[in-house]
Each structure stands twice: as structure tokens, then as C-alpha cells.
Length: 555
Ligand code: C2E
Ligand code: MG
Ligand code: MG
Image 1 (cartoon, protein in one colour):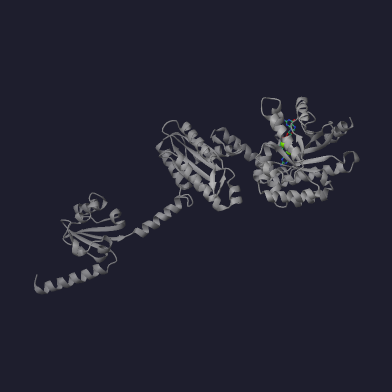
Image 2: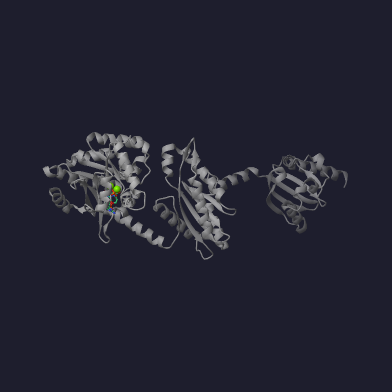
């Protein structure tokens, strides 16, 4: 090259080098023996390799961890095939994510790259947000469904468990969301401890968790074992703040094998099974069976019918007489019946839970109160029936609902019924919620003369220590204890205990389910003076009640 040529080449090199230095991309040039011939300052910075140190040395000696890996293979390929390559790769020793473009050239290989750590972190965050639950860091529903899909495609037998915490809402309501979050995190770690290697634990949101089990042998037995382990683990209780909390779970299990159809189907089955576990009174495990579908359809139909039953006037009250020690009738309990156009007379046990779940109980309860009080007012108008009492069942939702006290006051005023002859029957489930509010409501109504009876006593969880604070007038011994009293069971002991408790708290005690003379003999001898049961009368239609009362009380 002549002098002028050399000068212009140097000038060109300088200009080129200036351009390469001002580039925001990092740039490296290596020769055919993989020796550095150029490193711009951005590359120096990102790779921590000062030009003075590396120029002329071999790139693979500088980055031995990369030998054989992605960078190595791609660069080799670019040179061997004389093609440009572009890729993204992570280099662990420098904790560096790079996006690379490399071009083979006459002198070797030109490599341009940028650091993309921030973009990768953002992508990860987006993935985490989209596929993981923020509170527990467990996979969310969407990711879980993908795992199930993979398991189904692989044709491996397994099971999906849906786990729903019982009464989670009441913890949230009474002790705050922080307590709720603590419980959810604790549940997550207990489920992780129970799940086997290869199993997936997910949170679907709210208080619902899911497990995907990969069975290596008998899927049904494995699912059974895991469900039992989860129940046992929850039964230990949870430390929330500084007081213990007890929370059970309802678990639905759907097994699947190579013949299973779709993710949706498997999830639907697990959901149905969980629903049945809840309906079975919670803290239960149910495995999907085909009949469950039919039962659900029946329930959906029942719900739909129930929505119209009130306006179509399909409800009626039967009245079961209440007896005292002389066998005379002291009043009656109003018991709801549904005259269904196709199914005939439906018992409350079948539809009250549905009415409660759907909130229909609010309007229905109002109707019951109104109708029973109208009847009570008719009694009040006659000298012979003036002292008879009317017991009316009140569900928890209704009692805790808006304006319950007002509702009772209005009905009493509108019907003219004597408040002293009205007795509201509450169950223990009413009393465990919001105790202070419950006591306040009861006091307001007691001041009007309205009485309160604790129904099905002994079957719930009422705390004996708070019983004396409640302005009750009566305890009703649940019929199961009367039934068991003459057998081997502990019914007799429990019935006697309730009678002793009633005496101590100065409450009247009534025995439900007195069916035989032997029942009556036992309970009367134990000191009980008020009875209800088939021995005296079954619940009667309105039209038969007065005749029955007149006949019995005149004898
Ligand atoms: P409950 O309040 O404990 O009512 C007593 C139940 O025992 C009634 O069943 C009654 O028919 C039945 N029974 C009475 N004597 C005997 C007997 O000697 N032997 C046997 N085996 N059973 C007897 P029913 O009418 O089916 O009511 C069931 C439950 O439904 C009631 O239990 C009550 O919890 C609920 N319920 C009924 N009416 C209403 C209502 O208007 N509102 C609300 N919220 N619940 C109601
Ligand atoms: Mg009752
Ligand atoms: Mg009862």
C-alpha cells in the first residue's frame, strides 16, 4: 500500500473505531484462531475484559465456561457454514443475559451483543404474575390446568384434588385479612409438605387449592392417602397470631387415566366431588362418581323451582303440638312444607339448605314468621287458646340479616300477635357468629316479651361458657339423644346433662323426638317437663291443629 493509501486506511480505521466506540452495542471481533482482534468499550464493560489484557488472546481461554455451550456452538456454526447467527443466551459466571448477532467475515467473526437482563427480569415478572399466585407463590389455576393437560397427554394415571377450606370467610370477617393470609400461606406449606415429588400444588384463588397427583401405582389409593394426610394435617390446627385456629377442608377427588377426555372434564368432576364433600357437612373427602352429575342437575332444578315457589304460593306451614307433663298442649312449632307441583310435599331438610345457600331463606323466613304470627293472633283472640305459644324456626342467615329485629317488631304489630307467646328457635350455628351482636338483638326482642329456644341442643358447637350470657328461655334436647337414650349409646347421659344445665341456668328444657311411651317415661323421670314428638302428634296441617288441640286439652 502506498503512503496515501496507508494514511487513508488509518483514517478509515480511526473512523471505524470511533463508530464502534460510539455504538451502544457491545462489539467483539475475533480472528480465525479465535483470538480477540477488537473489543469496544461497551464489550469491555459488560464482559469485564480490559482490551489491554485480552487483545491477541484466545476467546475460549478467557471464557472457558462457554466452551461446548450455546455460544460456542453458534459461533462455530457461523464460521463453518458462513452464515449470520442470532440468539439469546445467559452466561452464568457474569450473570449476563445477552442478545447476540454474529457475522462471519474475511478476517474472522464479528460479534455484536447487548445486555438484556432487565428485559428478562420483566418477562419473568410477567410470567410470574400470569402463572403464579401472588400470596403463596404457588402455581395459579391457569398454570395448573396446563400441568393437567400435560399429564393427560402423557397418558399417565393420576388424580386432581380440589381442596376448599371450610368457613374461611368467617376467619377473614372476624380476625381480618391478615389472619386470613397467614392461614392461606400455612395451608400452602402444609400441602407442599404432603405432596410427593412430581406432584403439583396450586392455589386457585380465595380459599381453594388444588393438587395434581402423579400416581405411580394405584391412583385411587394414592389420592386417598394424600387426602387423608391433608385432613390430618389441618386437624392439628393453625397458629394465627397468638391464638390457635381450627380449619377443616372439603376435598373433591377426580381420578384420571389414559382414557380421560379433557382437562375441563377432569376439573368439573373434581369440582362436583368437592361440592358433595361440602354438602356432606364439610371436613369430608368425596371421590367423583357419575351419579353426582345427576344429583347436581336435580339440585339445580330444585333451586330454579324454589325461586318461584314463594310467588306461586307453594309453601305452607304444618304445626306440631307441644305437650307438658299432664299431656295437655301448650302450643305448637311451625314447620315449613313445600307443596311441589310434581314432587308432592317436600320436607324442609331437602330445601332449607338450598334456600339458605341462595338467600331465598330471607323472604321465606319472613313469610313463615308472618303466617305463624297470624295464627298466633287468632289463638290470642280466643280465651281457650290465649296462652298457647308458637315456636318459629329462624335460620342463621335470617337472624344475622339486615333488619331482623325490625322485621319481628313489624310482624308483631301488623298481626297483633302477643309477643309473650312467640318463641324463636335458634340453632347453635346462629350463636357462634358475632356473639355480641347476637346478644344485643336477643335482648331487644326479649324486652318485648319474645322468647328464645335453643334448637337441636347438643349437636352443635356452642361454647358452654357463653351460654349463660344469652337471654334464652328454653333448651331443646335434640331428638337423637332421646332416640339413643334407651339403647347402648350415651344419649341418656347427655339428656340428663342438658337437663342439669337447664336447671342451673334456670331455663326450661323440652325434649324433641319423643316417639314412644318408653321415651316419655325415661325423660320425664329424668326431670323433663316439656315434650314434642310423634307420641303426642305428628306435625299437622293448619286445618287439623285446632281440632286436635281442643280434643286433647278438653280430655
Ligand atoms: P326442628 O326445628 O328440630 O324440627 C323438628 C323436626 O323433627 C321436624 O322435622 C319434625 O317433624 C321432626 N319430629 C318431630 N317429632 C318427631 C319424632 O317423634 N320423631 C322423629 N323422628 N322426628 C320428629 P321437619 O318438619 O322435617 O323439620 C326439619 C327441620 O327443618 C327443623 O328441625 C328445622 O330445623 C327446619 N325447619 C323447619 N321449618 C323451618 C322454618 O320455617 N324455617 C327454618 N329456618 N327452618 C325450618
Ligand atoms: Mg325447631
Ligand atoms: Mg330440633
